[in-house]
Length: 165
Image 1 (cartoon, rainbow, N blue to C red):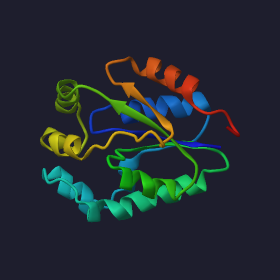
Image 2 (image 1 turned 90 degrees about the vertical axis):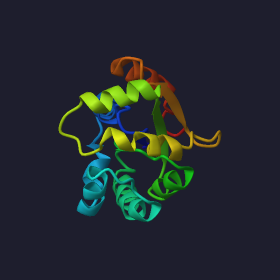
Image 3 (image 1 turned 135 degrees about the horizontal axis):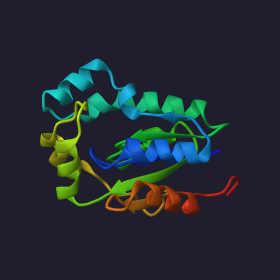
Image 4 (image 1 turned 60 degrees about the horizontal axis):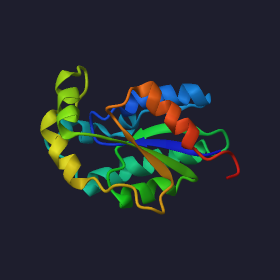
């Protein structure tokens, strides 16, 4: 089965959409933030963006989760900002990406109003600067974060490849 990576910058709704999508599919869900080493979380909490060197071990850990869920499927979140990051994730197996994309003002407002998350709004612009949209050869869908999460899930379910496709 395909594993779905719900991707996007901070504040795009990856956790909300990812958990709802996993529930609709009846597959396991994993939150990418749980794969970060403490040093990465401390760095982001202090307002410093991660470097590629910070991200490689994190991405390899997520790819390991993906590999372990190829037989049953799954949904995992990851910013997956760059093609090179998505290439690391693809080492884990068959993937389909759901890119949650939207207006910077909406993203910033969401980040400012949420509680209990280590990612400060000050890092949004660095994430947007790094973001490389899905290339035409990357399987997936881009969804507008202005849509209701349940509508995004419904659209994603309709667009996802069927088993064996």
